[in-house]
Length: 363
Ligand code: MN
Image (cartoon, rainbow, N blue to C red; front, top):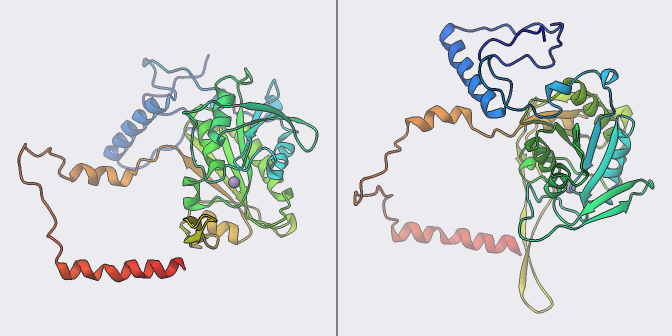
């Protein structure tokens, strides 16, 4: 190839064409900063299996990252798209997502047999998985697994279909997955599982209402899929899409956002079962959130479709330096361990009314 190798430590610009249409990024900042960020990028490239500097051994390229990202008109075969969700194989949202993506490529539906909402990234390890072929409501074929969303994606990538995939789409979830929700979300976890398998992915959710119309969310899914297929995602990245529960006419378009802050209003509900034994249910009203401009929550409440870039690297980068400044010496054997002052009896008693308050809340 005539394309020059990227200079050491510099990631090949994303989506860059062989003819060099895309200009190289302009570097700014002083030399010291530039050098340290260069070294950090180099380390990240190595961790993520991205192209390395000339002379260093490159790892095998994952399928369908930058390499395949190009205008759909230039694809020599139809993209293969895995469609899954956490609401289960019978969800109308799943069917709406499949139907929205059918014109783009060959879709394969493999989803949990039952509703797996809020199972997070659970993976079934201690029992077998059963897969059943199903007929979806539009007469097309799908498959269900008696496991989690992550199980469904794992099965597909471990060879259930004997195929590889160019994109994984998860949803359309009944209910938004905004801010902290993604730490519970089976919908988003399915997309994460795809990313772990080096396949680009997006999750799509719609604000909850009782009889949802998925027209707007279906169109948003189509746009998201085209963008990912044409522009590519780097390894470790996915997009979390949240759609307001409104018609197309009222929608104010897309907004690229960051994760917002959810406010949960969970209550512990105590009831008594027919045998007189108490049981508990985590209930309460649906979560609210902080409507801070720039966040996913703010976009959706303002009738925009939120596009939040997510990465699996959860490292708290700002904490790295602080953490290094703490004392991490293992104490010598027998050395006194620092301890908090013993709690006085009076202070211990002051805790008790809190317990009583909790009791009251339960009733
Ligand atoms: Mn769900």
